[in-house]
Length: 129
Figure 1 (cartoon, rainbow, N blue to C red):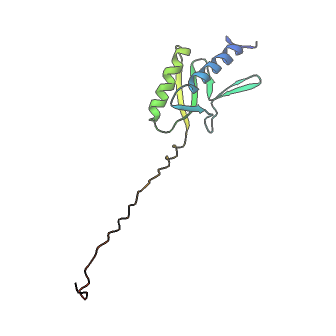
Figure 2 (cartoon, one colour; figure 1 turned 60 degrees about the vertical axis):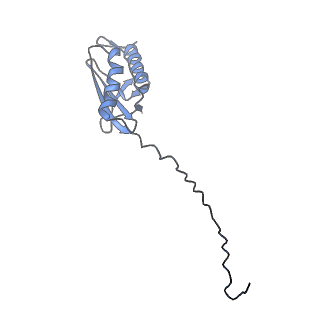
Figure 3 (cartoon, rainbow, N blue to C red; figure 1 turned 90 degrees about the vertical axis):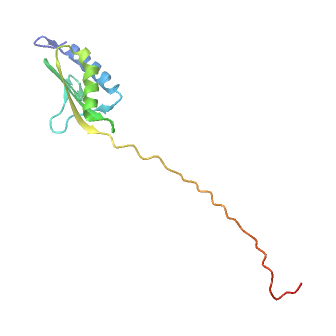
């Protein structure tokens, strides 16, 4: 495989793939994305690993967070998951997007209506007994 300095592209590709798989398994992550404007990606021969940039001293990850949890919590969750794969490297996490909030559950209200009919007999004052 092609070498660039002491980096072998096959090792970079394998690492980028492991990081991507680890990140998308995080419960608060909906997926990976490229950062709008400045893409976050690892470019390899014939393919790109979007959302993961593998660099010698750092790893940059750009995620789509699930709606709900605080974004700092999402970033910390991703960082904790990835750090064991890249000891000694800085792990930067970018929240590139957030999923839409879930649609509210349909609320079906069933109201039981009971009609009470009362029959009242009123004596006719003109009638004699």
